[in-house]
Image (cartoon, rainbow, N blue to C red; front, side, top):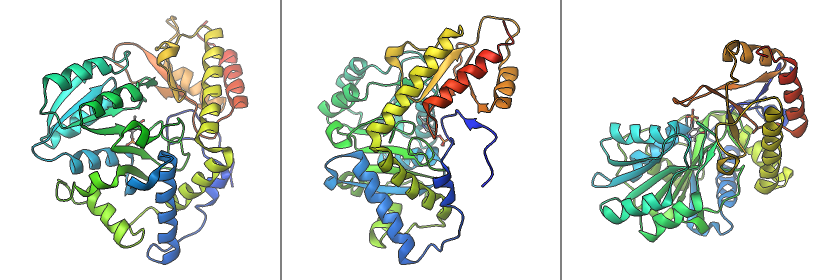
Length: 366
Ligand SMILES: *Cc1c(COP(=O)(O)O)cnc(C)c1O
């Protein structure tokens, strides 16, 4: 297998291990028992990752990137007469609003700006004032900035008001410990190329079985019909409705085994936290400042302000770091010039050390 010329310090697709990639070096048929059993094993493992008491939960896999899964949930679980409150503090929250608008779903937007966490008290006021809201959607880790939204407090508020909770946990599931049942999450969405460290190709939804069943007939799209996809997987023992990304599915199964071998989500979270801490300390030592204060931060990806120097350009920084063997990520916020460095994937403390040394070597803007 050829060596990678660089390490991806992006929020997905990300650097994966040889073990995961090796699972893709052959071809599989999609209709036989072996493949369907593998799919069923993945589905069961996902629910087990999501909660210690998995009996009332189920999972659905869906072709496409994470966005397809989010859109599948928004379009399949909110009825015509429903009303969705969306907590927004970045591009991914905004994307949910856009989906709901396109689908003609009545929406209330709670916008917290790009650098403040979603506020459960504000949500409480909105839910108290407007009892016609039926569903609440939020992003757990807002990859736009690296913000970790206060999931527990928000989930508590949503449950107190008896609403359905939809969580985009795309960039956190498998990398940050959580329990959907303890939190009261009804629909959680993630994808195979983030913290579980698979390759891109499909996403998945973890749902309260009973709530998902109740959504039959709501879908506004055939290919994104979450209930129909689930029904096929349940009825035909792991069968996808349309062509599935077989290589990606096998790689993902390997990635789940690898996560288990690493020691589970807790061990992975510790590795990510160590990576992120080393990254921030090292960059601060070299004069960089983070966009967010440490208390708002996820251990997934970090936004840094451009250094205050007329000779700094992201393009040159990006190219020089790529030569050094690291691929960085542009910023995504509107209010300031930033870039982002992710630390998830097959990325370890030694990589963070090498990165900081490389940045120190290449400080062309000084
Ligand atoms: C990656 C990501 C998504 C999905 O993006 P895709 O490009 O469709 O994979 C959605 N929400 C968040 C928070 C993400 O980080």
